[in-house]
Amino acid sequence: MFRHREDAAHQLAARLRGRELHDPLVLAIPRGGVVIGAVLARELGAELDVVLSRKLRAPGQPELALGAVTEDGRVFLNPEARPLLEGLEEYLEEERQFQLAEIARRSRLVRAIRPAASVTGRSVIVTDDGIATGSTMIAALQAARAQGPKELIVAVPVAAPDRLAEVARWCDDVICLLRPRDFWAIGQFYEDFQQVDDAEVARLLRASLPQGQEAACG
Image 1 (cartoon, rainbow, N blue to C red):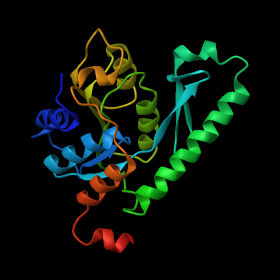
Image 2 (image 1 turned 120 degrees about the horizontal axis):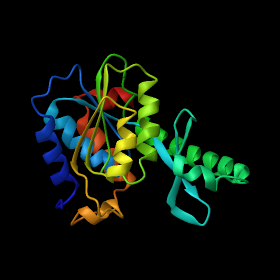
Image 3 (image 1 turned 60 degrees about the horizontal axis):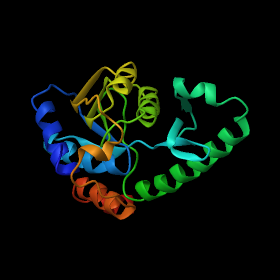
Image 4 (image 1 turned 30 degrees about the vertical axis):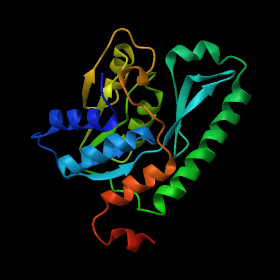
């Protein structure tokens, strides 16, 4: 059990500290992942940016992920969800477009603060506050891998063990503090799991910038 996201992030950073990283970059999945990522970047001397991927919700069951979509439009579908997709092609495309619109909104927010970081040839740590289905993380990893990093490391405080095994197929290493068998929601493992809003994401990204860079970004 973690006190809050910052507590979890400090514990994750301790696991990563001392590891040889080449020009490290932390890519956080908004919104909760940005709290984790800000601590990791600060403690590891890494650059902080976001990777934008969004869950594709099942019709009538918004907590159930059919898969996820990334900023470049690529879709990852959960293998377990494929039997549910028959006859849902129109719905899936509508949901994809809806989530792409939300990704575009978040991208405008983030890029008003900082430009997209270069990924090529770097040690890239992709993080979130936890992994439930793994769909948004896998989509994020696919997007990052396409940009040619030196290595892709997933660092999360907690994950469902079976989904973490699937995520591991898409990266070079996984750092995860808790892999509980009795897993039903990420918030189950935090004493304080309050929602993170856009203003907090913006504040954390601004705070991570080198002095003077924000002004250069407008």
